[in-house]
Image 1: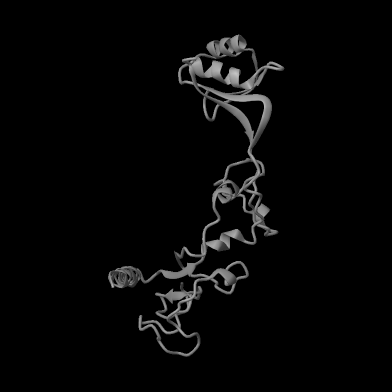
Image 2: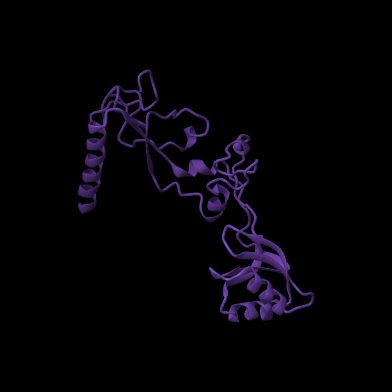
Length: 225
């Protein structure tokens, strides 16, 4: 009973919000749309790293001379330094050295912030959409590599769940679009095309959402939206 009251209250708040903002439309999309037929890698695959290589980051204020001395003392060769994050060094340890012992030596140095193996990461979950390479905001491999939101890395963690419903507030949504059609939320309280407000929410046939500009149950964009 309490759940029903809470659900009704939330729906009331959402409807009230849109009623006060007539320029908006809304629709609900299942987040599994982001999967786009995603190709998933094996979760059982163990994480690997480059043999004989480490990433060592020094604390703020440590001089470059001090950094060189530390690497030289431990017997590592600097392969590359990074400004972002600051004071990070990619190093190669001496041949046949025990990596655990080298890591321990760095960790005991008070100037070292952290040290770790140079892990190999692979994007295991990416969409099979032929236009994905054009979406540089998700995964930029062009003139400014990695200037993006790291979408493939996020998809390796999760691609969402069909049990989670997301409300999209925008000027409209094309629920017939090939990337959305199979993933659209469907209002269980409406009977499509019967011309009746079955769920009594004030909108007829609002199967995928509602248009609060034209005051109807079709959230697709139209003239004036």
